[in-house]
Length: 366
Image 1 (cartoon, rainbow, N blue to C red):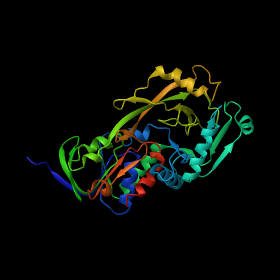
Image 2: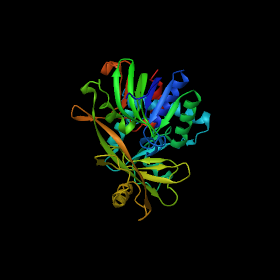
Image 3: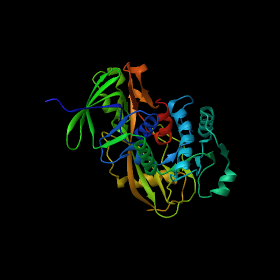
Image 4: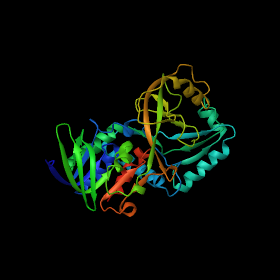
């Protein structure tokens, strides 16, 4: 017996911040949009398990998708939050350099300038001693435009606006198979009370951690358009008591992340994270045994951190793409130019700075 068939103009898979931003953008443009989300709530994974930082665009290679969408997205995000009363704060950020790290800090500064980042300045040891005597640092790079945002408030606003313009957000709807033909996509969907087929002219895969696995369900997608994906788990530990700063404090980045950094929350608290632990599958349990290594990482720039001042908070998992046997460190947007299928867009490897870049990524899908 054939499954019931429904039709719409565009299907967006994933109701995280990217999928919701895309749905809002397309619905405002008059398209009929259905968002399919496998979980019972919006933003259950990447979008709610991060540092909630509005990034200034320091780290990404000039001309890369991460650089361009981070900088454009930051401007759009500040404007959006101010217009809609979403809690946020332009608190600024310091990236600190210890002994022997001056050259690396200069390289980061040069990269940020070449990428188009604004509000940058180098801070010398005298100002550091005056304004942050608790810091062990010889220099710092200031990003005055960095900030923090209420990611849950942002997603709720995007969802409401998308629905106001006619989008349908269907929770607990899992995609099981996708028949891909140019301009015609038939999805087999498992809902809480039935299974059905949904046909659309356009398909946007914005499923975050599940975006790469979903490409395996697309029967006409060329094999070379299905990258591998690894999972980088990151723990966060909350600081007991008042934070030592009113701005974000970051060490210099390492190969797999931005280092265990001090980030603030909008309630006046602070937490440190994330570290990097490679895992086989998403797992959000916090390993309390990592507390000692956390304290060691923090004491590299805050030597006076009290023993026991950190307590386990939460964990997140980031997708890391691999192409042709090597890490692929940029966002990957696959459209007709890559795979030859009209109407299909895969948004892959959308990790940090995805929260900052969300509105700019949506803007690209005209």
